[in-house]
Image (tube, rainbow, N blue to C red; front, side):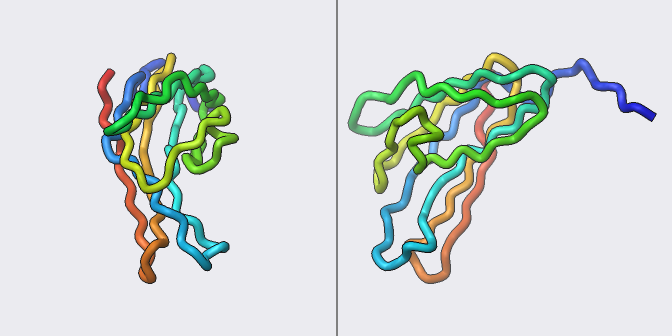
Length: 131
């Protein structure tokens, strides 16, 4: 039996992540790298065109980072990978916040892997849906 797609939209078009932080690189740990991933889910039947704005405490925002997410797909955007960010480099050891805007409703989560201490740490949080 074929499943019928719901026409109801799931997710939101605007999300905020107030706590971003790429931990500094740890000398001698080439196999483990502290990083953050912006976890995006597009549950819709349409391609999502996404724009990121990165806010800082002491400098102007980075605006206009463009991403594309196919329909009914997920993408864990590595925020320490300039190739995922249109060539933009986010500084390590500097707090930042994110605004995520999409032309279709999506779901946004942030995960951080911090390997700067022996026990390691994984943090994840759902974004704040604003629209």
